[in-house]
Image (cartoon, rainbow, N blue to C red):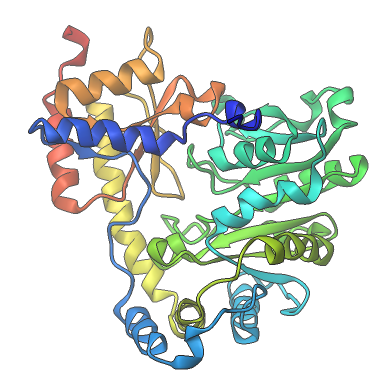
Length: 390
């Protein structure tokens, strides 16, 4: 039996290895506090769950759903974008529901990339940006994100021979893993670059509703000309704590939407309709007060953790958005070394930055999606950790 070479290009998915290591230590009786994975600990709002349970009992929802999603869901997505960002979308041609945004992120490269074609991918960046390109047979060009440049890519540094072969580019703000943000001016520069070089833009905006200190992240589609060159992915996972229900969307350029629909219609059978109806309830029936209350909790956690890290001499920028803390490892360490030290010496699991790209190797990522009691226990452990003496 011989498998495809592409499997050899795929690294083990980052979180699978982390979960296995945590499980191994816990099986040995160790109490591990995990700040590693960005899975909201706060529950899905009760009203959404009630709507889901009711919809699940409707026989009409027991059949195959349509890949393009319920018309009412596409309308709800368009309505949410209009209210939240002032962006107008045609529900029939500029909106496509997804089985979680990760599904669309993984498939979109199939719409652009032939073997040998290049995709521009941020480094550090969300791993599926790169993995989707590898599966499609394309090549990666990493756009480094440096702290001195606010973790924004510098398009002027991309070599001409790379630009000429590039078919599309990934952007992601608010950013995972760095917590960095971008303004409409940056998106406008990206659009200008894309138009000049005939490159499509895919923007991942999964964290647009997790923000602090009155900051409201913009949409990529707020920039003039965005729909001419690109699309934006969004997810109900973070916005409404619906990670387990697997529903998201992609919106924007109608030709890209149609291309991704063509791929999806041949590969999947759509989102279960009861979950679609729950998403309609979420997008249409919940006031912004829900996100505000949730973000107050996350902001308090952010401040506690950043303060604890600073007290033991670990640098971390205070993010205006996302539920991640991107902390710099001390001089003389790499991300895996320091993450292992943290796990072995105080029983705290974090994500090594190298898992997001070579430029992440000087950092580790903490997630704030951990119950308050466990976060406080973690903060206490950190406060007593004399890592410099080891």
